[in-house]
Length: 467
Image (cartoon, rainbow, N blue to C red; front, side):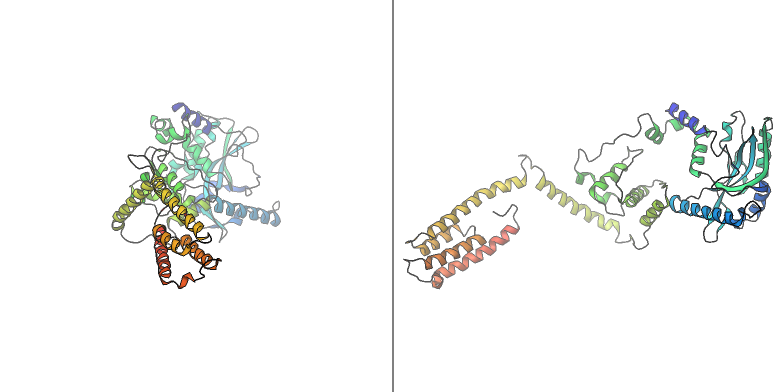
């Protein structure tokens, strides 16, 4: 692990010769014209009177720099600033001053001062973030201990003249190096890249504490990221996740809950969740953060783009929703009891029963099959006999329907019996007497209808398919 960290530190300290930190150009596409004058004096005046300065002040019109060129550059600058603000929450705008010259044409800035741009007033101010020294200068000569800008900040004020004085003393042994305070401009540098390289090259990374950190082992170890076995692989979902045990502000589907529970597991030092576009990532992040905060843990939320920050903030503190409600303790017991009953019912219906190992649905199907077969044969026998000519179908139907159909008086049985009556009275050779006028038969028919209604109620509360 120590060897891996050392390789990362060496890569962070290395800079290409064409890097803008080591190869500064006086004319750049995203850079204001290089203004003459002492940069330290300009900064001191601005720091003592920290009023916003118009962006156009850094693009003055001269004989070689006309109004048309100024307008085009300002429009370009505003577009870049607005895009960076909307997309990355960071404008990456700096005031560059103090330059080191070496060789014939090599030029490098000595100091980068962060600035903040206000699109409404079209002005810039000195940022509250501390200035940053050129972290690429040690790559030119590792024997020189270059000063750090943070060491010259006292009570929120940066001593720029003392910083330049110290820098001049450090490089005075280099005969081919020259330092000048003359000249300053505003331009763009990647803040995240500079701060990351600055952090990796600090001495705290050389300690054994960094090499033994669980986070570093999981992220930059030799094994890298590995698939994590889920807590739900061996145990069913309902026996692992219980909403009463967590403090999730949002309700999500079971697959999302599985990812969140696995991420919150104490053995997961680092956990990455890969989702499809359009997934509710902000709600997942809010659920994780809320549960960790309830556990009295510190939470740091990092996002790269402004839209991600906006979505998380809206999910964390939604403007049109309140999470206030009944006291949690009063609902927790009820939720536990209700969920325990539902889980027990689900297990009884879907899981094998002990000690036989058979499922409840299979047992009900076995019980239902003989009754279905008996009912089918009875109905078939009644229909066939009732349609035979020369038989006393009415009396036969009266006997059969009471003996067989009282147990299974479904709608099909009632309809078939009624149809048999109609066919019997119309068939040649019979008495032609209307069966429906026979009061005894009519009473039996009404009993069949009553039993049919009871059978419907029974079927609604019984499992299995309709035969």
